[in-house]
Length: 230
Ligand code: ATP
Image (tube, rainbow, N blue to C red; front, side, top):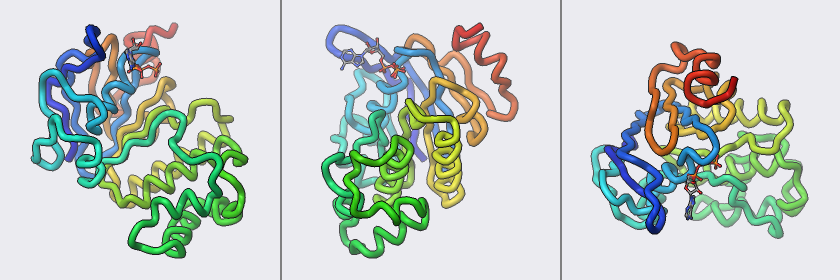
């Protein structure tokens, strides 16, 4: 499905990613873990056309998209859910959904979103900025889902959320996966991501230092061995 082959990328004079290879298959969930500053966000940017690799290739279902602009990735079904969620805080929930509804019509978009997160259906007239953090994340996920993506890359979905809300968000990510959407889930804290992932990659200082099946990866090993947490 989506793959990066030996991608090297960075900003100005700084190289952040060093020959990173990562793949996510159709309907697969991949967890991308790593300490602060390891380059996780940079990898997502390179995987979605927001950052042009200096070397290497980015492919979607065998088509080379390296160096193509972000809208080409979007149109091809690659959707980035950025840290900070990327919703419009001063617009209502309904308007946020409307922006993404495109050809399908607003009613269908609202029904789809409310089916995924019933609470959103009760908040349609509220501004997105007045929602709780968890509800904002749900709205962001619903908006991503409305683009009918084949791959969604999620940057730190649980950042700043209470544990019970994090559970809801991860249930929703699991639901997207069950509906056949491939996921790349970036997390600084491993447990939740590992629970829904098929495979895991650990990024450290811009290089993949571990990859394997999620059910064969212990969190202890990850914390001590790769993430530098005692
Ligand atoms: P975090 O968990 O803190 O988001 P991360 O693993 O996502 O970390 P990145 O945000 O990809 O890491 O950052 C990797 C490195 O690239 C860091 O050293 C950061 O300072 C640097 N960096 C990120 N964005 C830019 C930018 N726009 N210009 C220059 N350097 C940047």
